[in-house]
Image 1: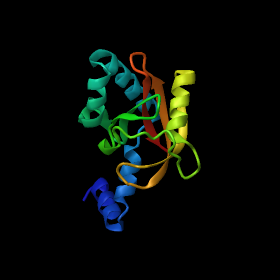
Image 2 (image 1 turned 180 degrees about the vertical axis):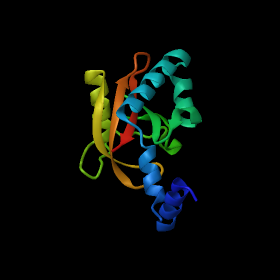
Image 3 (image 1 turned 120 degrees about the horizontal axis):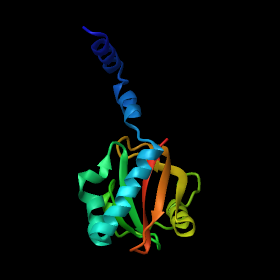
Image 4 (image 1 turned 60 degrees about the vertical axis):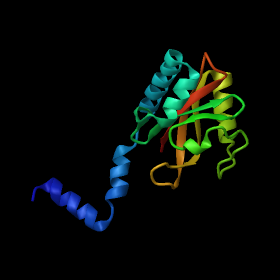
Amino acid sequence: MNQKRLFLSTVLALGLYGSHAFALAQSSKEDAKAMVDAAVEHVKKVGPEKAFKDFTSDAAWKKKDLYVMAYDNKGNVVGHGANEKLIGKNLIEMKDPNGVMVVAELTKTATTKGEGWVDYSWPHPQTKKLEDKSTYVRKLSNFDGWVGVGIYR
């Protein structure tokens, strides 16, 4: 048995593979920014309504632990790659366990700065555990809202 197979067999036997494999799958800030760039271009190309549907249902907008989210500036979810059930809900008042008003802060960053990072806690779509997250947001030029992509830290 080669070293790699021995390592994987040992890790699987210890029940550690899931957490280590996931750690390897985590994305970087550069990955998140690149996905936001692509999402903004997609909104420009196909229009907001089609783009938001794509972000929600098209697997091309979900990579590793990344997904695109889109909100209007009132806090309404218009597209969400991790949870389709959020579409149409207003989350402007939602707080994380640390008291961060997540959507309000994301919206504020997009509307006042045009783009930027916001830190908060959020359930991971794969593990369902609450984790620290940083989301990069950018204001849209052809819609009264923004798109964002976050990384788990």
